[in-house]
Length: 253
Image 1 (cartoon, rainbow, N blue to C red):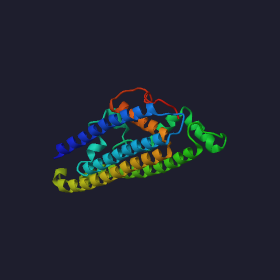
Image 2 (tube, helix red, strand yellow):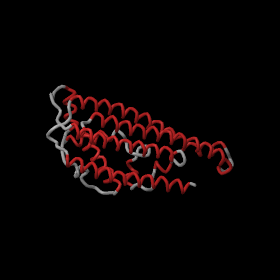
Image 3 (tube, helix red, strand yellow):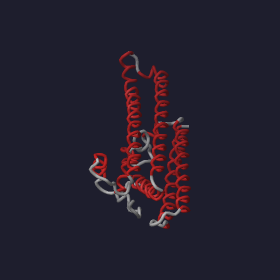
Image 4 (tube, rainbow, N blue to C red):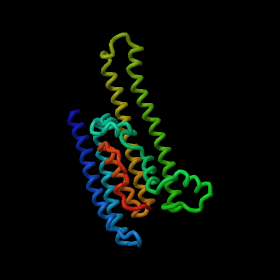
C-alpha cells in the first residue's frame, strides 16, 4: 500500500509538470500575439479565461495533494522525485508563498528594494512598471503572507520537536527496549502525521490564495508574464539547470 501511494504521488507530480509545459506553451503563444501598445477588451477577456483555467489547475493540484497526503504525508516533505536542490529549498512540502513576490519584483527590474523604500518614505513620486495602488496592494499581501508563514513554521517546528522527543522520552522512562512500546510509538507518530498533513494543507491553501490575490492585483499582460516566469523558474530547478529564468519572457512591465 505504501509503495502504491508513493507511485501515485510521483505520478501526480509528473502530471503536474507536464501540465506546466502545456500551459507555458499556451501562455507564450498568447503573449507573442498580444498588442502591447493598446488596450483590447477581447484580449483581456481571453487572457482572463486562460489565467482562470491555470488557477483552476492549481486548485485541482492542491486538492489531489491533500487527498494523497492523508495517506502518506512524509513523502511530500522530502519527495524522491525532486532534485536535491529542490528539496533543500522546500518549505512545508513546497515553495514559500512569500517567494512569489520576489519574482514580481525581479520582473520590475533592478534595485527594487531601494525603490520600494524610497516610495514609502515619500522621496520618490513614482514607481516604475507598477502603479502606486498595485505597489501598496502587493506590499500588504506580502506582509499578510509572511505573517501566516511564520505561524505555520512555528507549528511545524513544534511537531518536529515532538517527533524528536518521543523516543528520548521512552528511553528515559523505561528500562526495556523501545520495540516493546511499538504500539504507543505508532499511535503517537500517526497523530503527528495527521498534524503534518493538516499543516501541509494549510500551506498549500496559503500558496493558492497568495497566487490568486497576486494575479488579481496585476494587469492582464502582467499576469501572463508573471505566470510564464513562475513556470520557467519551476523548470530551472526541476531540471537542475542554472540559467536565466526570465529568458522566455518577452516584455518588461
